[in-house]
Length: 627
Image (cartoon, rainbow, N blue to C red; front, side):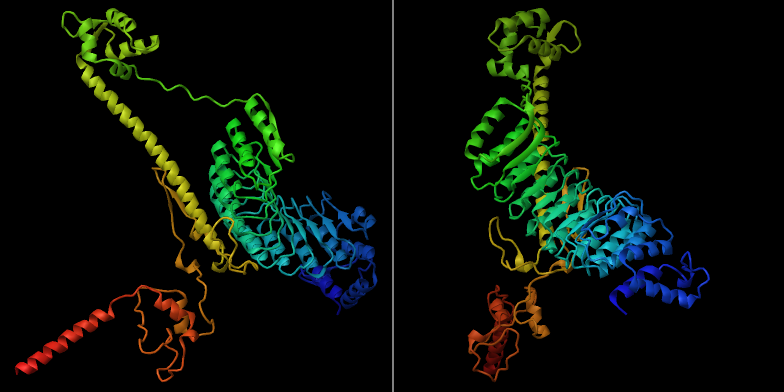
């Protein structure tokens, strides 16, 4: 039986409990066996148009005339036609024999997982369709599984759109597994889905393993901090992505920090969309640290974030201060800038004529920090001795001064206090509003003031410490994520350095990153990061992989075990595989593990035991002589 007949059989009869129940409209009295043979005869002899019409009769749907009119064309657009699962089945039966269609658009047809299954069965046999759009079809988790498994066999699809299909967290794992071996798909659209933190982990694994994707759209998801850090870890080691859309994902400043770290190493990304990601001026500054080391990014979309003139100045200063930058376009179209920004941009454009910055207009301002409120009591203490000041006013020595006299004395003195500061000082010295300033408790007031000052300093230091701890924890988490997605043979050492294995990333298992990325925030807002478990750490094999178990044990060194002491008279293998009776073995032929063993710090356990034995022998000799 031909390939077409086999595929059509599977598409036509798999969903029916009894295939003989499928009856053509004009064949109601046909025998079951004759009916099956007639259907097979139809498949072999009919054209694609006639086959589609007969398939519509089989499944009970109305044929789409637009499809019949466009048969034979390279692009078939059936968006918004309400096909449903059965309509997709009839379409799949007809397209198995079609050899002309390269672009198939089926967005918004409510295909569901059932319709996706029919189409993926067809795509396992059809190798002419290169561009497929299944957006907004309610595929959900079962549909994600069908599409992912199809990608393991299909060799023709180059562009795949799966936007708005209600994919959830764990559905991303299907795509991570599929794209670990599929390098033919160049464009992938997974926007408008429900990928969150764990989904970001799988997507990070996906781009770390894949060497084919060039365009990736993840906009309108919910990656946020945890998913953002995990995804950026995969971006750091990716070598093919050129166009990346991460808009509407709530990255925040934490995600901007991780993205900046990734951009220090990524040298392929050309277009980056970060619109609507809750990034503030601080996050823009963290992102720019990565842009300073990047020489490939050309377009940066940063519109509709919480940026002010300060953030806008930070972005264009990167272009000014980085000679090797490739940035040609910056979009901050919602930010109102000031005259200083416009003047600086004009100077930068003289050196970078291709630079284009879209901003909201001139009229913005840098928010001035409120003037620090000066404590009037401190001012008095700096200018003069308080007790001398009050003695000059208090002629009777009662340590009580009328408010009127106190106010007049302060105004006539050289103390630089404004009117509101004088009134504040009076309220602190006359808390009961008696009209008399009683300065007997002035010492207690001064002590309380010093305590308040120290408390305020501690608050500022604590807040700064927590912010630094937060940044450090995110960076540690990011580095742990990079280790989880990067083979040891291709680890990146420093920004701008070449990879040890530049011939290509070796395939490795898509281990979920939840083992390393477990962030817990306590009541004190401090972060703690759990280390990777040992089962996810893969050290490179040293020496011949086909060696004995004893040899393989040295590929993961353990300094706590006893180290065999090499012989001083003649070289010996660290694995103990050469016999003592073979003195012709030269040191140049030793396995790498022997050198590794000798380079380890010596554990002086055996020598100490030998010295003790020698001491015992000497004692026994002395006893014999005495006897």
